[in-house]
Length: 330
Image (cartoon, rainbow, N blue to C red):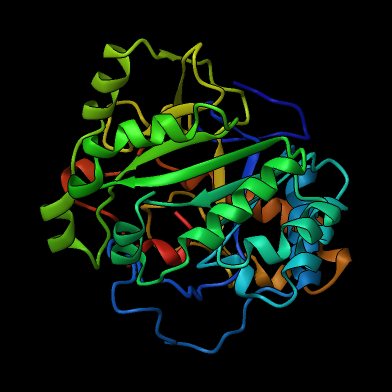
């Protein structure tokens, strides 16, 4: 399958419109499935600068990517995060600027992020019950985070979504609460199957539950699947006429999950990752020094695409070299 000069595709005919850019490895939560002992510094904090980020996104925009998601770690711990949003939004061709955040700074900063050009918000929120939230994250900030979420809904963003990791002890018994939560809120709540990483094998074995439990629950109650947009993520969302919001599922262990992959990732230190569960990466940072390097940067990105695999090997117990989800923002 061939695409025009302004588009990026791999050897399997998949077209890429969506970049997930980590801007930091630092996270201030201690989520049980990711960083139960908290984030620990293992290398100098030499993350991409706003200038480097603008050059990187400009090259990807030239290759047809129109959606950028800023992730971490927790991206909002960066003091220059609002500037990063503005620099991203200013890149010609980028029509969607998204952030995935744990909500720590949401109520304080959401207005300034929206003014800077934020169009989409994803909030990582694994429980609606305060005790469960504190047990999972290590913090008692649920009320503040929910207040920030409701403020985001007032700001007319293009989309506000919640990501909740599907865990054995907070799974099916909480679906009813989540459904009630979206009854009058135009929010999509997507449950993500717990994913194996290099650091969480024991926790994974004790807490993983398949996404089928959610599918069955939804279908038995009259929720119906919604078509995915071309530049959307991997979630299968469901709607119901009695609810303003949606519930959905991201099921990386399902057969064919990678067939419609449309996203690439770049680490906070400037490495292109072709798969969340891959290994290594292609260093781009030496080509982010000057605007005149853009043709070489584009060529390196194009050349890397031949190394993208058809799918990951999670089902075989192989998460690649991903130590924890904070390294790449999931």
